[in-house]
Length: 134
Image 1 (cartoon, rainbow, N blue to C red):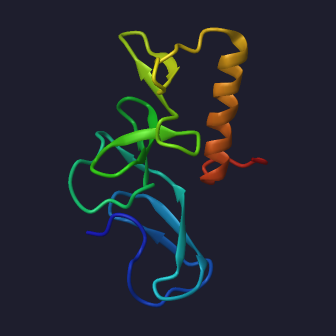
Image 2: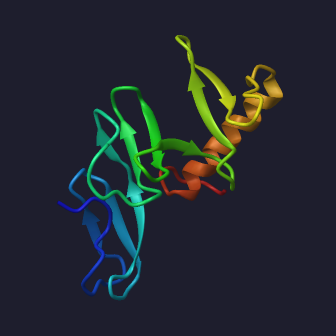
């Protein structure tokens, strides 16, 4: 059972791969084992908590509706900036969007919410989940 792209064997440009969880990959540089980009997250009912999962692996948790990125050690988050302290979380009984910075400031004003939405969109474009300019 392989989660993620192939890690051995000779691969060709534009080769397609579907892993054991249903994540889909395309080979962007031919080679052994080639360079791969995930083009579709795996649809899961719970965040995977076992097996060898590559860092950066994307899942769509159909139970909670979130698209999540594997951050290592079975930690799942939505990464929208370049450093680990700038993740987005949705917290509380009524989900509240907020930055994962030191003060956990809630995104309540329109400008902050627009910035948050634009960064989420850019992250989805970067990962190839949606089309558009980054």
